[in-house]
Amino acid sequence: MSKEEVVLLDFWISPFCIRAKIALAEKGVAFEGREEDLFGCKSELLLKSNPIYQKVPVLLHNGKPVCESTNIVSYIDETWPSPPLLPPCPYGRASARFWADFIDKKVYGAGSGLAKSKGEEREVAKKELLEILKQLEGVLGREGLLWW
Image 1: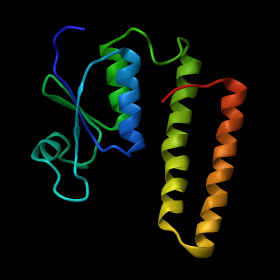
Image 2 (image 1 turned 180 degrees about the vertical axis):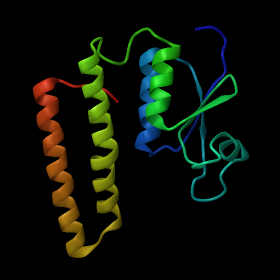
Image 3 (image 1 turned 60 degrees about the horizontal axis):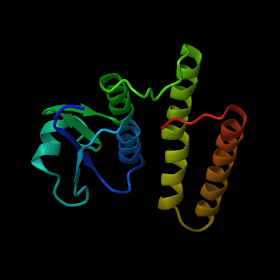
């Protein structure tokens, strides 16, 4: 890779930021990580780079912002094409994108619900998350999917 500026605005526990970090690591792209204070004062750089959602992750490539983790991963895959992150066939790529969306919506949603609940509601949320993870485990075991 040539001398390019690659910066990732992130938050250490965010699964969406971790997804972007994994993609960068898989491609061997050196980057500077800049931790954001999401519970205090968000940086001017974050507010300027993602004015709509004001969320991380944001990838800055030579000063140009790319927002949202799936967009970031696609951008990384297209900008640094080797090795490819997605399967070579259209069906494999569509399947990988479906499961990434499933994780974003179902796994993250159920995990957030569990973290925010208490008492009996927490037990229901725990069962829901376990069922979703079992479903995902079954597919991963069957199809051997490995994608963000």
